[in-house]
Every structure is written in C-alpha cells, then in structure tokens.
Image (cartoon, rainbow, N blue to C red):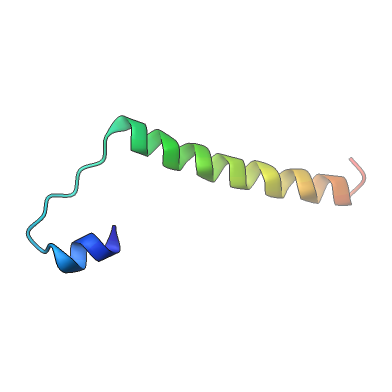
Length: 44
C-alpha cells in the first residue's frame, strides 16, 4: 500500500471487507501463535 501511495499519488485508497478481514485474521493468528508459545513456555 505504501508503494501505491508513492507511485500513484492521486489514487483513492479503498479496502473492501474481504481484504480487511484477511488482514484482521492474519493479525489475530500472529497474536494467537505468540500467546500459545508463551503459555507453553510457562508450562500451561
């Protein structure tokens, strides 16, 4: 997205629901994996 902002200065930034949810799911998966790793290290 940063490349588009630099190269296409006049472009309108639009995100549809599919892409928003894909980004949210990726972020949630990263947090879940980190938390799981930390809990296992603590013996849970």
